[in-house]
Length: 283
Image 1 (cartoon, helix red, strand yellow):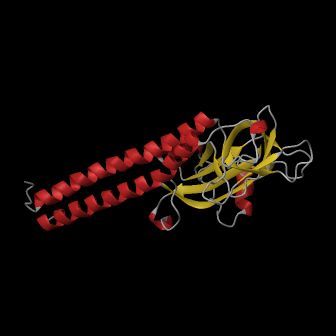
Image 2 (cartoon, rainbow, N blue to C red):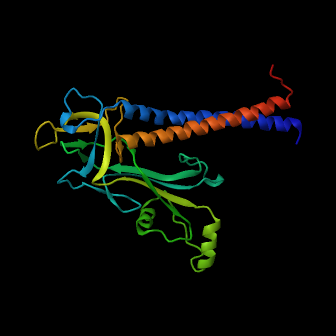
Image 3 (cartoon, rainbow, N blue to C red):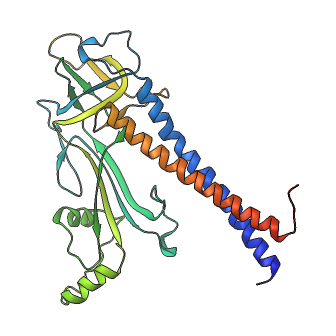
């Protein structure tokens, strides 16, 4: 390579690292905002909610709304009864599928994704609060089933693929040669993963949102429903307590900020090599 080729390589690499750092720091903004929102929003007992309450947070146990036909949902990959779920089908990023949206870590592409939630109740021992999850932000623990093409799919995932036009079935191979299949499993990266997040009945939950009088309540008085106000204060549904919710968002923020800082340092290194190769001297 000529000197000019190295100069171009150093410059492009440095600029690319700066762009990556900016993107990572931009992604960190949402997590930082989430940490701040959780910190500054007071957690109140359900029986302390009044008409003067604006954005509040409650902690308790998530339970289905009684006497409703859609009290629970069925999660698509695990087949678990739940109150809310998110899912995505992800594949290793390859040139052939790079036009698809990327996962958060950038190493996978998303072939299909979705979410659903049932109206549910929160019980904190002082009372019940109804949650209307439409428009809400789910912050739930994820499970991932990592699949190789030569492995047999669980029945629930197989049924999902049969009903989904976005995800084609991968033909099983090597099933008649188990030793070769095991060796290939050891040598090859996972080809596809099915990621599922769930809020299950009787699970601990933290919910932040805007309280409104519950016109559907037919038992007792002073019943409330938490909704997404649509005014910059989104409804947040987390499957852990307040401190756990804050720590989860903090880890996400630290991840993006840390890797953004690393990319910035690498970018400075490459720009330094570029300047040195041009004979530029810093006085």
